Length: 255
Image 1 (cartoon, rainbow, N blue to C red):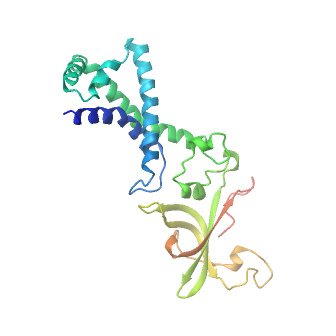
Image 2 (image 1 turned 60 degrees about the horizontal axis):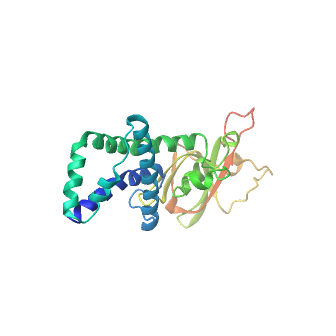
Image 3 (image 1 turned 180 degrees about the horizontal axis):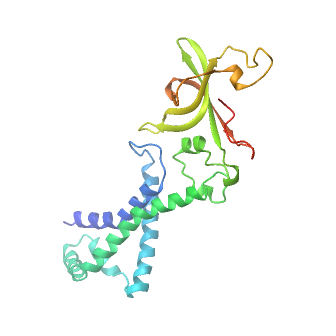
């Protein structure tokens, strides 16, 4: 009892911070979070402190009630006698205590998603943004590379072209297409790319066509089908090209 109760109280006090942190960050790893333990705890404690400060201020403004610091200190102490007094005080006000933590946990679960969507919508996390160091999702490098999220709204690419060298039966082939979507594995590694208007050519083929032109359709063989799935594990190199169409253009420069 002396150890279990204080640990349980600390857990409930810090739980909103851990919940807010896990919901706010955008991470490409889905299996385990290998962030340093000290970093995780520090961030969670800071978020918990901010959330409790906001909630306590709201409680004072709405209900004109303040936190009973003496009750909290008794709950986290190691004296069983103090525990009994503190538990009685909490039991006498259990509806308000329940409402406080329930509303705080709901806020910590919902608000990070709203904040993340707002950051993405207004591109507050792009590399050149003033608050990039604070709001950038550092655990999602493929997201920035393959979505053009680092561009300002006016400079957002209309298309992202991907070219990759793949070893096909001992012969290097160059594949080219417009990126439609991409998928990651459980460990956050790039798994596969879905391309539209995919084309290919042997790597040893000259870049300039025989008639002296340099058009993609002259240098590449079109691949039949609507979508071409390129596995990243089979690619030797990967090149990303951001394409911004001129005002009078309506289609990507391939096909």
